[in-house]
Length: 128
Image (cartoon, rainbow, N blue to C red; front, side, top):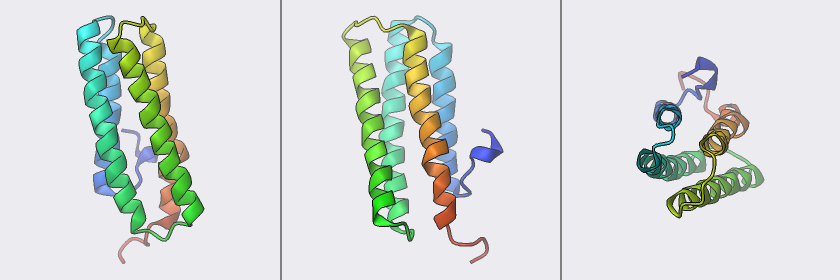
């Protein structure tokens, strides 16, 4: 994973790395519908777990309430979006694989960049 995407919190950074690994796996499955469904299921579980961990972590930081709520709402929107993509795929609504990958990748990448890296400002200084 790109070092510029590291938050500096080992558990969160590891989860981000696993999410990006799953995105790479999603890109590799191609048109295999069974594999696509399996990878989307795993990725959905990973995202749920990651967001729960991240919200517990954020609760211990001195983050303004409005920013915390905005971050949690972003989590909800991503979960809803990925769940809808997964359901559409399972129901045979033939979304182009590039669109599935693009949407899922955008959810993960934009969240890490636009929200998670912003948490750095609220981390305690190193060595404390």
